[in-house]
Amino acid sequence: MNFSNSEKLFKEACEISPGGVTSERQPQKFIPGKYPIFLSHGKGSHVWDVDGNEFIDWICSYGPLVLGHNNENVDNAVIENIKNGFCFTFFHPIYNTLIKKLLEIMPWADMAKVLTTGSDATAAAIRIARVCTEKDKVIRWGYHGWHDWSYGGAGTDRTPYGVPKSAAADILTFNYNDLNSLEEVFKQNKGKVACVIMQPFESSKELPKEGFLEGVKKITHENDAVLIFDEIRTGFRVALGGALEYFNVTPDMACFSKAMANGYPISVVVGKKDIMLPSQKTRISGTFFPNTFPMVAALATIKEIQDRNGIEYMWKQGTKLVNGFKSLINDFNIEAEMIGLPVMPMLKFTYNDQELNTKYKNIFFAELVEKGILLHPNHHWFLSLAHTDKDVDDTLNASEAGFKKLRKEIS
Ligand SMILES: Cc1ncc(COP(=O)(O)O)c(C=O)c1O
Image 1 (cartoon, rainbow, N blue to C red):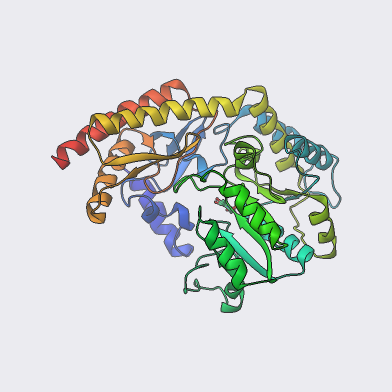
Image 2 (cartoon, protein in one colour; image 1 turned 135 degrees about the horizontal axis):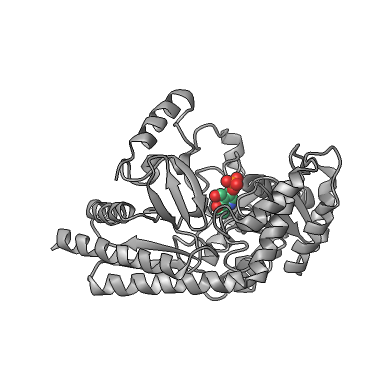
């Protein structure tokens, strides 16, 4: 497969923008030379790159494309909306409509704040927790965006580039599925912790052990801190109301974005009134927060997921995909496993020798790209309502060829 136009554009981008493209989109996050770098368009579950190659897209822009590319209902609602102007000094009534819809989906929550990006939402939730508790420290687990408080090295002795040591000093972490480690962090920072913010689970790691999320909630509350679930990746996909709905554990606040509006920029913090109300005292504001078209897109996206029983559909397609992969792994006697949940699955190679593991992984995923299947080699994938039976079959057929090639290499 030829990526010469992608590579030419990337070379040019590197001259005019640091790193060429933003980090998770850089070639080294995939397999350099084996994946496209620039895409031209998408429709449904398929994307085309600037060299004319077509792919089944299982990455879905790292999550937002829950309905697939170029969804007509959402895009037409947005087009109608922008004809009337969308960037106003004052709010539009659609704001109330959206919040009421979100609170209907998330009956545990009383209030919501609408923002633009996932990082906006997690940063706002932290600020709200700090206002509410009048404490500074944050215990976090998972990825929450790029801001000073959330980027890089919590739990390590490394301060990431560009983050002041003073900012990193207030950020702590703990080990997932290990309540003792959380208790220990609280003990060492008694009376100073405003909140625990965490992804309820991370698809590339282990699922929560029985009682773990409940235990986190109990320990957090015993220490007069606020529990925040970061549902930016899991919301509107694992369940409409996120992983918290699926695992049946409610936090005090939760952050949503990505799949909420099928790619249009919007995020939200939802939560309990007693925690969110005091945040009026602080400033959480963005020029683009009142823009109407992302709200219109969110309402249209939620409606389509609901109308089409979309969560169930994604679980069904994801389960077929995962089961297919499991059989192939078994048939070809490959040391690998399928991890995560079926709506956000990941293929993990488990050879002991790291170098061999990387080599085998790269052979497999590069072969899949050659066959027009865009699966992420180093990150979990995302199911969408656009993924058809044929997409699953085509992907499994290509994977069979990929595993066959790998088996030959191993033997
Ligand atoms: C779990 C989680 N939280 C927060 C974020 C940050 O969202 P954004 O990139 O929109 O700022 C991400 C982005 O990938 C995420 O996966």
